[in-house]
Length: 104
Image 1: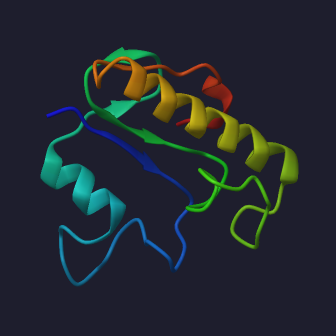
Image 2: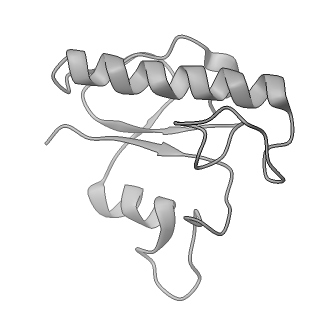
């Protein structure tokens, strides 16, 4: 399977971890799928953990209380969208990281 998962600053929409279940939240899904953490351009599947942005950043660069810095949130949005497009066009064979400043 070809999988790209993004992990953002935790919020109440999709929390990164859930204390009541090991597979709850984004981190639980990443663990269940056995995905490696990705911070540079990588062949195959993986999880990209973002330092900036929020769970809506993939669609909107608007800052919010979780990610109040407009410039960093916009940079995260651009990186997320680029990764999804690149992953799609590579038919799930490559995750392309173009701005390593916004990823862990």
